[in-house]
Length: 316
Length: 274
Image 1 (cartoon, helix red, strand yellow):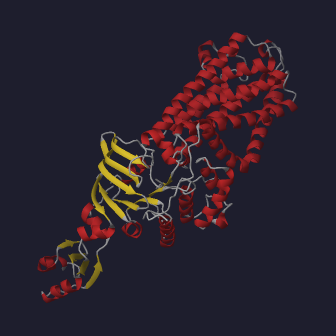
Image 2 (image 1 turned 180 degrees about the vertical axis):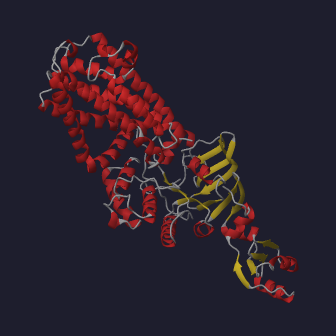
Image 3 (image 1 turned 45 degrees about the horizontal axis):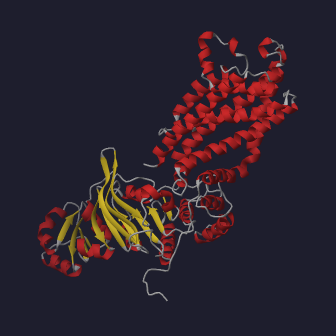
């Protein structure tokens, strides 16, 4: 028994049954079942307010559950919060670094909270600064660092106790593409080392890149679960044909082609046809005299699944 | 060779640090910051009493005759212990207002700390211990400056530093509770400074004895922690304190501190464990 917890299936890092979190009378998490296994990269997807962060906070042992069962590393967060927190790493949605300390001090001071010796945190800080590509800023204060640097430091800080399980709440939100790719690379490295990752995101590309398995949440419930490819297979078609029409012409073009696809969707600027073979569908549409201004055939993505499951209307 | 498909064992290095040591780690975190700024911090805690002692003790004091109002002592001897306590109460309240609110709201370092094995109660304890250390340091600096002025009469005066720490913490704990219950930008602290701290400074027999305060206002003095601190400090610095009164003043401050800690602890948990 190495990776897992103190009882139950040692391979289960997190297990929740009928998990509920209520704030006042409102259920932010409304009875979810979730299991995360050792070494897995697991994603919580969902629009804002879906209950992702509330779930993460319960797993991080900083928010007691209102109902249901929850075990993290085989332990009960209500009873063993500090013991669990000693073994996990948390990357919050908003950086909460100590702005008045240096990069190095942020890592060292934080490491001490995990009961690590001074010598250990000194060496660990050097190692983590190299990992986060911050070695040349080691003794600079944190405040003037760029957003990407601060994010990298926050992630490095969460690794100071060599966590078995890392909780990353929207790790790349607000970063530029370079910083995002660098972070994805680092997270992939962690996964290779056997660290279990739980990630919340509403960046579908990120979820496809990082997650072995994910759940889509909406309104506090889990609406779908599986690997990115199995979700695409189940909730979307292999390909999507996008047809764009001249302004005002779109409405008349929908009915002639709608039956060519498994599912169609009318957006203000284009028509989406969900189909196994985009090329064939496009030919069939041409044969029916449909003349779009431009066309695009692409593979279905997780974003298509996401929008199908959680709708296109704004949630705030 | 294992055939287990799961990656090789990885065991986190973190452990749970027990109670007092956990609080002390928070102090260590503050110390990391203080090490960078101690010069300016100590300078200001030295320069302020210098100015106050010069202005009140020597300048204003030169106009005050030693008499029954000052217990027969010179005004410098009369006012010096009370100024130390007043300074401690001011910085105790100040350090527990916006800086603590920032831990919850702006800098959010309290949220970072309580994501580790450290609990909200240990975090609060660490804040109070750290504040106690700061108050001790600035009290000692003040004491040395005052010594240079010849403002101390007896060895018992070293206890004035302890009184300052006690009074400062007694006022700090309830303000920390208030900060933990503050969700807006902290306007209530401005109100507190104006309508609580200023009256406390003026009507706590810091600069003149309580019998010069009108009877109708004297209840304000009796409930002021600074007055209890001033009475204790003068008993230590000038002697002649009635043991029963000394015990009463000390008990008032201890009860205020304990009540503040209990309340702050509850509100820290309510704010950080939701």
